[in-house]
Length: 263
Ligand code: ADP
Ligand code: MG
Image 1 (cartoon, rainbow, N blue to C red):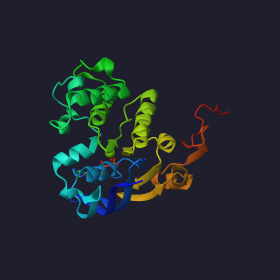
Image 2 (tube, helix red, strand yellow; image 1 turned 180 degrees about the vertical axis):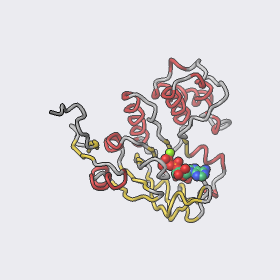
Image 3 (cartoon, rainbow, N blue to C red; image 1 turned 90 degrees about the vertical axis):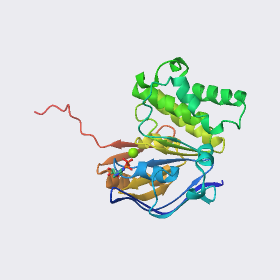
């Protein structure tokens, strides 16, 4: 597998505070890498360092072997696509227009037929055909997330960065987003996805990186990374790690029955 990102000793400071500390990480083509970790751990900031939107104070991010700072904005837009945590569309564009925006980096380089095919595929994979004429701003949270993912897919980039794409989604659509991520990886793309559901990450990611207080405290295959001790240490909650029927680890908090009659 070739390397998409090489991240070496990356430190990012925002608002006077160090948010990402001395991170080393490689992201390979053909893999889904899940970033997990508590709220405020620095996952979105690290993703911002990968997109080039968050300045790197120390260290280096290389994409395709080239330092990120040497990329033109136009080349970057044809190479990596980003789904931000907040779906930042404030004008009442229709859903179709939002998806079409994914093609803007390719203007003048692709035929109308190629653009139409990319848009149609993105619409189909995100299950939004029934929403195309609706204003984006009038969609539910989950519908917005899927329309935004369609824009990202329509961009047809080698690298796809998704910040909590499943946060607002129902069970079926959560699974479908990760199935899409897997199919991108199978086609040789590199996918980095921020997730909160550790069991979902374990089932669908090739590797998991746990971010805690700006550091990557563990990275590797899900079964190696998601030990009860490590999850408890990072999240501050006791968990069971059980084998799911498909063999992947399931992470379940210790829960006391609250309906036990006292007598
Ligand atoms: P996560 O995505 O893991 O929840 P973030 O990367 O969004 O975490 O944020 C990590 C920390 O950095 C948080 O404490 C957050 O308040 C802080 N932070 C994020 N963006 C900024 C910013 N622009 N200025 C100052 N602090 C920020
Ligand atoms: Mg975040």
